[in-house]
Image 1 (cartoon, one colour):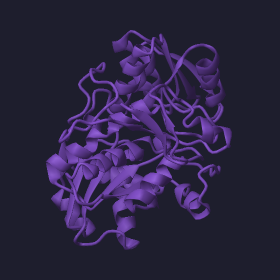
Image 2: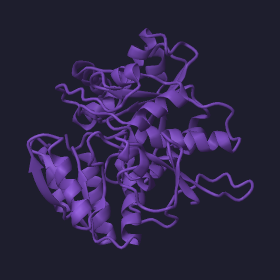
Image 3: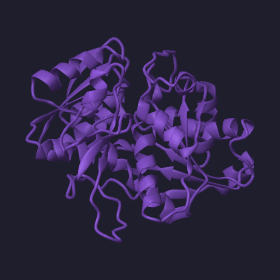
Image 4: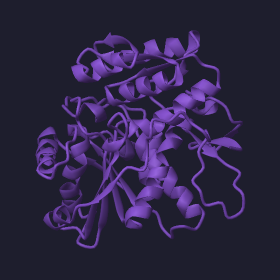
Length: 360
């Protein structure tokens, strides 16, 4: 790695830990993610990652299933399901945890602090256990019991709060004043998770390319945009190194309008809270990195109701695929994008099945 670059002001920063994003933009009141830059050897096409030999539980290389029947039913040319639910703890979060926890250990940290609705907390707890680090996880009181139990069985210390925003000052205090390494955002307005961790999502792009070629569209369940941005970074690398001649469009699935409202104003710092059972992609905030992934790839936000996500989950279950409600929302988004004219009979579409729903 040569530098980190702000996605808002393009300022360069030396390699290091910036859990609050670009210092200059933070001081100006605009939290902004930093993007990792690398000095690559000529003709080196491998996707670079910050930690070369991370702590691993076998994450990545997840299957991509050809769902021809779904493609016909939805009126698109081709449809694949990328099963991130096949990761060790059942969600895509394991890819980020492997890089982030490994960086925490290399930086000399002994504990990782995070705010989580479930999957991230379970994943971080597992990888911290593998790395010999303590995990401190701030949850909400309505955190699904099986998620809470899994975190505790991996040795995490839990602290419960009434609402999601109430968790962030607690994590902020642990990171700023007690030496904890930041496992998630703790700012409001939020910034993306530590860029070293988000880099762990980049190989998803290579895996999709290897399994099904270059799709036209990828549909990603989205809260604060770490997965969306990380997948975009992977495709960006493939484009910059000449492996592909265009980027696929990345579409962000959310349970109610956040990103569309932020795009309308050009400002990601708003608050758009609403009730939903899609807890993994809930919350009233979004991030600049999510807006940038949409803008740079030509994708769009799409809202799916709990009822639509529930119907989609049943369709996946009839195929033998268990899915958390937030994950099944990716399938529900296909018809929404079709009706909006974003997809058609020539589209080749990949759904990111983010988690298998075994705990909620």
